Image (cartoon, helix red, strand yellow):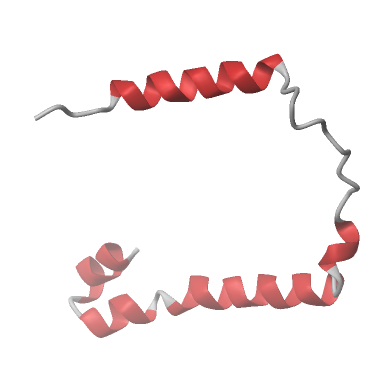
Length: 77
C-alpha cells in the first residue's frame, strides 16, 4: 500500500498518511464490537473438567507430530 502510493505521488508523507485509513477502520471495528459486546466474559462456555492423568489419543498424536516437525527444523552447525 505504501509502495503503491509512493510510486504514484513520490512523497513519503502521503505514502505513510494512507496507513491511517486501515488504522481508522480498525478502531471503528474495535469500538463497534465493544459497544455490541460490553461484557465479553459472558460469551465464554463452561469448560468441562478433564482428568489430567488421561489424555486423548489425538493429543499424543499432535504432540508427536509437533516434536517431529520441530526436530526437522533443527539446524546442526
